[in-house]
Structure formats: C-alpha cells, structure tokens
Image (cartoon, rainbow, N blue to C red):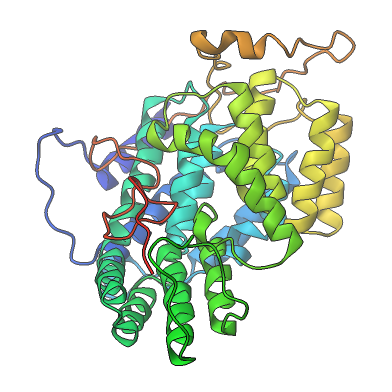
Length: 438
C-alpha cells in the first residue's frame, strides 16, 4: 500500500487535477508538449509493469530493458534540450520484443492500449497514436484514469499537428488558385514541422500530379472529374507521397492510389466495410460498437496491411469472447509475420496456440465488457463452442488483481479520435462533405 500511495502521489505531481473550466497556460511548443506527455504516460505504464514478479514473462522483461536503454537518452524536461526523435518502427511497430510482450498481456488491457498509443505519439506518429487510443477505448469497461489517459493521447495528437495542419490549409488554398509552386512550398513546410502528417503527404502528391499535367501542356481535369482517377503517368514523387500518407495515416483513403493489386484490395476492403465501422469509433470512441463492426474493421485493416490496427482490434474481439478461437491464430500469425518476422514471433504464436490466456501479465484487469444492449442480436449469432472452453487469465504481479494508476488528463474535454482541421478541400480522413476540385 505504501508503494502504491507513493506512486499515486508521483502521478498527481505530473498531472495535477484541475477544474474542468480552468484555462491551461499556452504551451510554448505543442509538439514538444505532446511528446513529453506521451513519454510520461508510457513511463508510468512501464512502472506498473515493473510492479511484482515478471520472471514468468520473458517478453515483458526484455522489452522493459530495451525501454530503459532508450529512456537513458531522453533529456529531462527542464534541461532545455528538445525531446529526441524516436523511431516508431524500432521502438514499437516492428519490434519483435514489443510484440512478444504485447501477447503476454491480456487481450484488450487498457494499460497496454495506453502504452502502445503513447509510444507512437512520442515517436511522432500522431495519427496512428490517436487511432489506437480510440480503439483502446472500445474495451468498454476502461477505468476512468486510463480513459483519461487515452483521451489525452487523442487531444495531444491533434494539438501537436495544429501548425502543420494550418500550413496544409494554406497550401490547399494556393492549389485551388492554380499556384502549384506556392502550394508545394506550404506542404513541404508542413512536413518539416510534423514529418508524420499524412494529410500533408497526400496533398503534396496530389499537387505534384496537377503540376506535372500543367507542365506537360495538357488540360487539367475538371472539378467534376473523380479525384482518384489518376493520369496515365504520375511523377514518381506522387507515388512516394501517397505511400507516405498511407503509412502515417492509414485511414487517409484518398492516398490509396496506384496499380498495386494488394493496395487496391485493401482500398476496396476499407471502403466496403472498414471505414463505416471506423467512422462509428472515431465519432464516439468510448461507446463500444458491435462485435460485427469490430470484426469488419479488423478484417479490412488486415487486408489493407494495417497490421498494427488489425492486431489491436482482433485482441478486442478475443477479450469479448473471453478466449482465443481457432480463427484467431491464422489472423494473428499473418499480421505478426508481416510486422516483425523472426524466431521470437514464432515462439509467441506457438505459445498462443497451446496455452494462450493461462499466463498473462495484467496491467489493469477490468471486468469483461458487455456488448451494447441494442446490438445483442449481432452477438447472438456467435455462440460459444462447448468443445473449446474459455481460459481465464491468471493475475500476475505480486498477487494483485488490478494495478491502479491515477493517470489524470490535463483537460476533461472529450475529443474526436482523428479530428482534422476544416479545409476548403476535404479528404476522406476529414469530417464533412467532400469538395471536388481540379
């Protein structure tokens, strides 16, 4: 109890409680603030993981050791030095040690969702961080302190990109005036300000296309022409920009252009079933959608190669079913083999196929979330298989059933998961009506 009290006091010292109406002082640099707060949240979750005995969890042990090596190179907030540039792929997305640890923790654990999204944000991947935070809120029964932490990631991801978004809006206006050179300068500045701005990469590619058409002396497409109808030949930079847009913001649907069969298959899956489910989550992250919608979005992400999202969504389905089922093994294997192939992932898959939930390192273990009452009929079509009884996870970490953390959000304002700035030209990732333009 004494250790827990000290831990809570430490959390409150970092995130002091404020009245909902209190005005926060303007941050000197929203980008730096977002990364610092995300790193602090990740550090707190690691502290929770370190409570108790981790001897039975080699993946958790190995990844925590790696985390502390990176932590040693992070300058203190009061040092005057900027937060360093971290590589999201090396730290989390394509790190086999992270994924080994990931599957040593119960499916859908809110603490794991907060750790995952925090690590992405402090590595500069704001859109991916916000999306995974919204997915984490779909657990349904998320303790309030973790709910505030996930909401903080969403709002900080938006704040970190505000200046970059403003530059993109200026570039869109110049593009609409056919000032392509000026628009490109705005997009390049936006990318310099926040390199993982998927919207900026998409607009850069689109303007490069229009500029190439104009310079070839060909008529520009009319405003009524479908925006995704690519010319016969695109500049190589356009394809590169669209690829970067998809990487940094996988739901930037207008960037799914090209002739690669796998990419086009992913586009169709997202348009048909994925994006309707994502829109429901994006608008109301903490309102659980149906199992069918989660499954549709997970399958669409898997088809589109958005494996990080697909794994998080599939684990939510496992949490709702209270067990792994035979179809889960093939799904998880396909995604993990693409993200982080290797011996450690093979061992993880073998463990999941033999004794998936009997050994699990809990961060926080809320009660199983009920499905929304109005969607009960959807779940009734998936009865439990009597031959595959559910396996309940055992609590680990000094015999504690639940690790508690007072992770207090800097503001209680609810924020949409991928809120994009208002623009004279809407992309598929932004809210509102699309505007056709040449």
